[in-house]
Length: 329
Ligand SMILES: NC(=O)c1ccc[n+]([C@@H]2O[C@H](COP(=O)([O-])OP(=O)(O)OC[C@H]3O[C@@H](n4cnc5c(N)ncnc54)[C@H](OP(=O)(O)O)[C@@H]3O)[C@@H](O)[C@H]2O)c1
Image: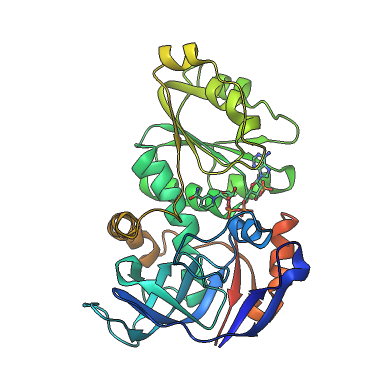
């Protein structure tokens, strides 16, 4: 089968389209004929050699697939060859075929295209898990989502509008993306280039109360402004560390304000945990995709052969929402 292969680790030059054997579904897995996948920031980090796949998962890039079941593996019940499905995968999505755990599959609603479905599993489930299941965001709360036009952030914004419409949403964004973030429904957008310490603006916006939940992928540089923006019993959920891993923390303030800092990753969780997260997402969020309340935002669809251009677009932060790789027609 055709797949995107890595010739070593590094920049765009290591991405090559080549031929490899079709993977075989193991116990509890299905083989998916991949119609589309999408690019996630962790793919770029894996390409650079800094984010290896969990043991047992494919070395091929790609964390989510949308396609059709080609073969059902041993021990799988309730799924048939030919069904339209989307799934999280630990790796292997930049290819014509990929294996996925049956417990991680979701049926693609009839109203959705394969390209749209290819955007759902990694970005929306990451946002759903961390903002709602871990962060515990409720309606009428206030939340900060960092990273204006990014895949996870736009997904988080759309999920908040759909699931907790009375919640106030604060977003940090690059200046060129501010208008589009506002159009998506953010109540306050802070230009992160002009105002790297957003905590004063947040205090003013919340009448000094602070926010209930923060979804952060910036890491060290944002620890202080995040903690200064968090209200009593607020939760800071850290899903990325793009600005560094070490920072100073005022433990007294954290204790007195009963705040929590929670680290979270999706990819390396046990299969069973991911199955439970997918089941909760299927029940709570998927109906909003089926009725088109949430429509994934696609910046551009690239054919698999143009994977270099797709990675370049993300590397240069030229996207708003998701970048899709179309694998088959
Ligand atoms: N822990 C997990 O399970 C998990 C899962 C998936 C992703 N992640 C992490 O989540 C992050 C987002 O992933 P993604 O796939 O959505 O990537 P993405 O589409 O490239 O989004 C990242 C966004 O970060 C923004 N950004 C850059 N510098 C910033 C700053 N100083 N302050 C605020 N935002 C800044 C950019 O915002 P603009 O659009 O405004 O330019 C960019 O669009 C990555 O760090 C990724 O590793 C973690």
